[in-house]
Length: 497
Image 1: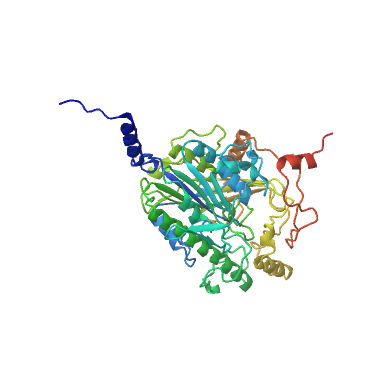
Image 2: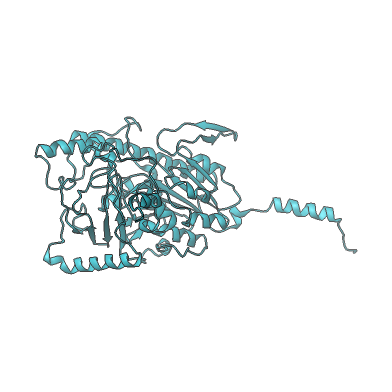
């Protein structure tokens, strides 16, 4: 038989149609899709997955049932924008040059997102951004809060959608418009449950008898009403998490998509957000990845939000950046008995008002060093203006607050605090002066000194003035919007001699 010869044009057409019908990167690239969902100001245990008896969070509960719940997950700070810039750079806030609230992340800081983008991932952000203009180019697409939202109709047409205040209106549209021929990374950031609150955010609401009030806040009708609105926003956020899970199912992208749900800091209430107690820095951390992670599993080992960047690059088969200060926790996903760290480190900087506090937390103990003990443990400005704090002020003036509820007003604060977090989870019994805990105190001091030295964590070179009144939460004349960057602030408060 004679050999068959094809004209070159026919051969090229054949190759073209073969290429068009060959499965593309979504099927041939084994690297996982990565979805990071960030709540805004949600306490770690304010959902059913962590045992809350009344907050309705069926989708977060489902995520935990289908994945792994981390029970000792922490943030590097208890303030919104510094927490986010720490996550995206894999650096402690004091090394990002964006450690104060609203300071933009400088453009010379590298992020894990650009590494994913440069190595075949499509990268998108939808919702709250809050990291400054300089690094927006690290994402292929950004749909911020307040930008026009569109979703695809069943016939593929774009239909406008309006914001309901959640900050989540673009989550599904950005997931729908992603390229289907490459792995993707999505940063989905809510505004819920950040203040301010509005009635009837979610129907039905929460009756006051369903509210759980921590002992360090007064159990008043005003406090319960404040918490009820906070609960409603968590339920609204949970609904959007469910929509993401549904959309992944529709796209057939469940099996090899890692979904991680966390918060940027604790609830916006007194002695929670902007503090280094667990109410400020402990975070929900729920991870689902059906291809690798056992459904219904839990992990009690310590992890920190600074660990997300190196872990995501490891899972994408990429080398970590030399600037990373976190640890890869990917081994915990398949070896739950393994541990990657014996303590976490957290920090508190200026947030509406001045502060400088550091904490070291192990499985069993928390050590806090208040470098400015002359300052009270003032809540953020929006919490100062809340019904809860107004109730606290009135009861304080009437002499009706308990000693634990007075802690946010007390000055001076103790320079050192030590807590047994197993037996005292609300961190109310300071053991720093108890001789029975001297050895533990010394060990925790040493851990803090070591990590401060290793990461070059030093007292700030200048003091930033309060921008809000510490009693009323009202803005002071020195308040500036937008806030200057760190470099600009240094020029202002450190004039050359």
